[in-house]
Length: 158
Image 1 (cartoon, rainbow, N blue to C red):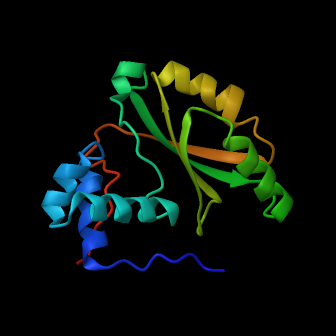
Image 2 (spheres, rainbow, N blue to C red; image 1 turned 30 degrees about the vertical axis):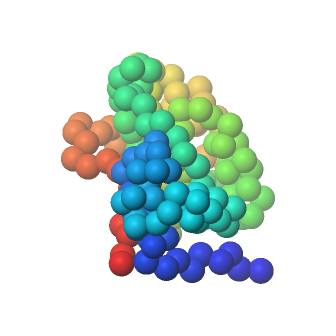
Image 3 (cartoon, rainbow, N blue to C red; image 1 turned 135 degrees about the horizontal axis):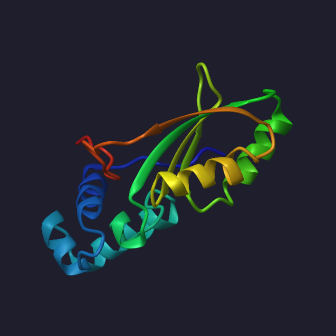
């Protein structure tokens, strides 16, 4: 059964505001959306229950946790079979330095986004962790020199 993600204009307004400030009070959110606090609370509860709102999190400054270096890694597997894909995906889910991992179409199989403290830490991460993941044949690394834009905010169309 497909998920029901149908949203009306009020739901979209709620989501737009919550993406900017996930800690906004229900009272303030209700006022901004022209709802009663009870109606606002119920709508947000339903959005959570339906999986539209997946989580509320704190976005942490990477330097505060000694994760200064942002890297992207292209990963090419030795075989493109379901068992190798599954083994790779299962393994990378357990690696804390990996923030995101996406199977992609193109000249490689996965794009990994990771954070480590510096290039020395990355060298250890690459040699001891990523390259030892079952099925990895080749990697290409791109170290980020400057973050031009970073957001978790999705565009909300009216």
